[in-house]
Length: 337
Image (cartoon, helix red, strand yellow):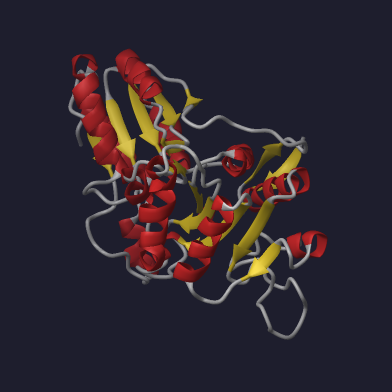
């Protein structure tokens, strides 16, 4: 066990899985430093240097740079998965899904079902989500609700280094296509992480904080916003239980309902949009399956239904913060400001 950043945990999970299984390969733009470019080999390791160092150990046969064509290399990854390999495809920013939408949601997601389970697509698509770096609307969205809509895809949204390593190992070993969403503002977060390989099952939520007054369900970076709010609320005598689903497909509905049954109140904090997002989905599930548990209306804390601005002051207004979570908790507690 040692302190590792979220970035190091991702890198270590890939490294250990590539050592364990020779069928695991890594493909994407700039994962090997830029094909055909001069200068130091393995200079980049992707836009956030997450895969830096892997080329030196595994070589160009297993760490492959691709042209700037998401449609092309995602199609290649699906074909490789169908042929017996276990590709890890780096989509860079999840906003780029539009370029390879057909490959992912019409081919990879449906392949196993359409062939009656006779073949499989063991593909992991790593991609970055989230605002906070002022890189504008085309590089800052949280699109995991879109992926979660399509049956056949598993969708992972880890919030800490420990989870990201264990869940990524599970994703790489899984026989179905997995969309693995890494929040770009979490890469520098540090935590004690085991040095040895380990896995975390999909579909098991983590109870990050215990509390008896209000359930706060939060995803990815919003877990830390929720924890900040919960700490402040505890000073007022309001104890919040913070639940991190960790995966949106499969979604641990049982744990969410169990918590709401205990607290009677629910606030959902989600960086995806207010329309057709995960907050809306979770709210609908609880209203349908746990309505009798509720002592107050469900509250959602999400960004507004607008594109994300590049200007830092506007971007800060867009992203849910602890003050908004506290206000929502006050409302469900009947203490509206």
